[in-house]
Length: 192
Image 1: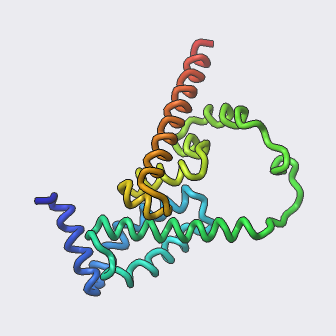
Image 2: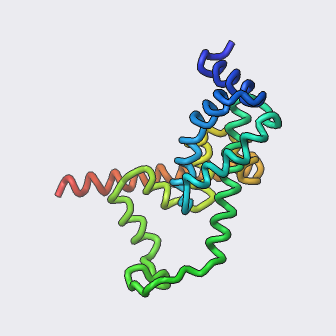
């Protein structure tokens, strides 16, 4: 027998799939903050609008979602990831116009080592995640923030479970290395 919260979520999803408006609201209020957080961290231009778009697409498909709340959560993050990828591709095809600012000139960038050292001093988890390659960052965020299983994450990003496990292992090893490097830097600064 599951926990009362899990059973409550399952019955809420069941009621929402039958069109119960209170249950639809509860599903939205339960999932939307996590979806919004994912989209904000991943750099969506309008994370609130994109979150709403996710639920505009997901809520009519509640009856199709299998696996109760977990299946619905996986569906919501799969749709969110797909919409974000579409937005990022669209933004990548459109030129960015603006006044020239030498400090923002992308043609000259510090080396990867300089950038990593500069960011490590700031030290937050989000900044460490920003140092990861795109695929690793996406997998870690879907697994941790989205609470998706390996299978659900694989479905969301369109890769095999083995590929997701490999990407996650590389990401976690990179984060361990970055965190250890930051700790050494902090200790050295404290000794001075």
